[in-house]
Length: 351
Image (cartoon, rainbow, N blue to C red):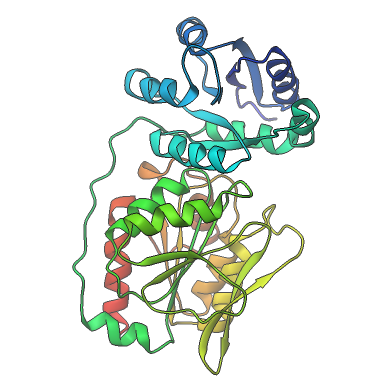
């Protein structure tokens, strides 16, 4: 018998219709309970004091105070899990990434036309996103970064075209990836990444990571050679796999169904790396809800790859790393601030 308590949700939106639709969607989830709604941030502030919710949904465009401003104030005064609703536009994409930078756990794309019907079509995804966010740890101090040196010895190995780092992440992963990539030197072997994201946000996310990282960060393209010093993000709605050709390692994009409930899937990436790279690979599983990547990381380890999982204390949601650890795929666990150091150490040992 499942005795887990229901997570308490506050819905904040200036539209009465959207508040009602979201309330209906979230109330259908067996482990969510909408305890109240608010029409703007000032109303929300009072409702938070009164109701003490576990998580809130927060619209960006609201009267008197916009959602981003309120989110920034909330994370300083009363940190709590928040899911932002942002329009699926160019401006909305930038706003969504700003929200993640401010501490939002996740972002839901708000339809620009016929919002009620659009939200209903996304009902299952919305409920799962809000539930995952309700389990998140927020507001703690950022873990200290253990910045590794830029080692010249890594360059020759990286250019040899035989090594690869594969990373999978989900809820909380945008911030985790940013911290990792800010800390790695520019001469590591190629890095392939699956981060579960809202469709349409990956390109903007890659551009933002590229600006703050010493390595180049881009969205993977089908058939391109994987080069040292470059991070390749899986695009939306396609699985990212790695193949070996005469030119070395290449990215292969595959359309298809969801695997482990996701498209792109971490399991699909890890499976391909196990087959193409064997012991010349390192697999890393970061914060996220669910178990995507657990099976594939075990396969990588069985093929001789080194494997690393983010530890529970620094995960926003200790779901994917826990599932991988329990399955036996994680060789070692480490705090987020030490992930980059582990990557460099692996490269140096296996040079």
